[in-house]
Image (tube, rainbow, N blue to C red; front, side, top):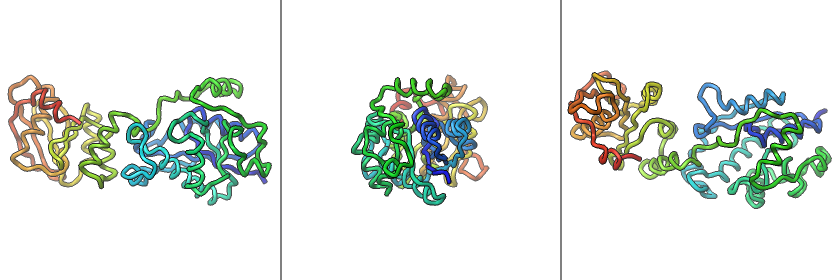
Length: 334
């Protein structure tokens, strides 16, 4: 009976190489990839295409697990803190390994493999961080890192002889040259560049996330989704608005509207859809209307008609406003 291992397969070069090395040792691989709304490679309809493409080329089964909702508590209060921006990398890694470990036990696999390289990522791929991940995930000795295994203590599958340690590697550091050379040797020539990843590491997205956490600590999945689209403005501690940037985004914004949100649209000219969230007094409606007007095709007009309604009602009010001046606009932008 073949030994089975669970591979954490993102579809990037490192994880693809790790799977290839273990497949060549005659071990059966069942791959798993984790997606969330914070993944730069994720679409709601298809999941992570890079992971799916890599699994198909490697000839392994792939289980896709969406962890968006489960990540929110980790982002709000990570045990091990954040990286440079709002990325709780160590906590996230521990969580995904726990989930992979559950899947490992569910199907009777013997161990996990990952494409981690010692020293490649400053927060989660240090030697002490790797030990913390193994301990806190309950997988001590059961995580095999084929690309850097010779630099680490032997794992249980190596000790038991399930894997030949001599065929594993000693890659370390941030240079990609050893992996690229290995890919050529193994005939792997179609892999994504390493520029993708997690939105929480992006400074602009992280700024929006900090604002959301400061003014709405119990933010929902819907709130987090909105961070990915539009222009964001903070009108008060409770009220923020999101202005669509194009027709596609306008439609998407409308689909995320919740009961009690206000929707603003310019009436006689092409323009954005604006969502106002957090409750707003009738007397303060002119400000979001003026911001909406500013981003319309009529931004040079002196007065513009802007319609608004409280979702899900279709009853529309109309305001006649001047587009907001640039200095006030920039002062409110998140």
